[in-house]
Amino acid sequence: MIIKKLMAVSLLTAMGIASKAQVYIQGGVNLANITKTNDGQTAKNNMLPSFNAGVLGRFGISDMFDVESGLLLTGKGSKANTYFSSATDDNYVKTKFNPVYLEVPLNAVVKFPLEAKSKSNIFINAGPYIAMGVFGKSKVEQKFLGVTSTSSSNIKFSNDDPFTSEQDDAAYDKLKRFDYGLNFGGGVDLGKFILKANYGLGLAKIGSTQSNNSVDDKNKFRTWSISAGIPLGR
Image 1 (cartoon, helix red, strand yellow):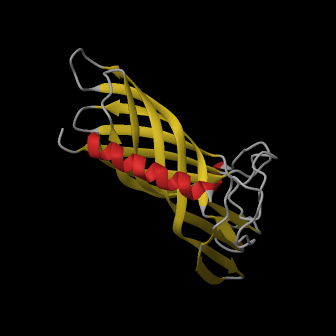
Image 2 (tube, rainbow, N blue to C red):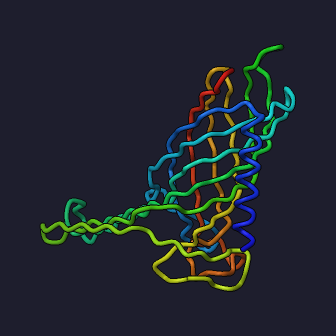
């Protein structure tokens, strides 16, 4: 499948970059969501707190421009609360949908030095990403007439290729294993510490039975991230 080959090539590229680049470890918080409407809108109260962690590297091409890639473990998904009365402590259904992906970004980085001959800079970055679902949980809590019940299940992934019209291993209770999209972000590099914010714009419909990504922008990942990085060996 094309997406598997792209994932393999990207992983090899990331490993190659990491072997030559300035490497830093990253960790942070995600605010994940899924588009609800045909024009790609989300609901603010459906944001799901999650995480991101991994290793990234930059080539150090010049003082003004760089290329960044690596491997991240990142949480996506959404949550939804439905209340059936004015009281929010009874008669409700609360769901959390939290798939976790291995993601390979490939960003162009433009840097604006804070001082002459200084490693500190403000930067902006943008580029594509591909991601592979590895695990996740779907949780439901409901309470009616004072009685609370909870349930959870592992998220199932199909092996569908999003670049073809064929549906491989598709089912309504599965997600597509492979996601792809664009990253937009920026931050500040203080030499021994990096602070950054990022917005992940998913382009693949996550439902495994949905093959046409261009019909509308419903059912796609939208993920805000705030992260801190520590360079190794700088």
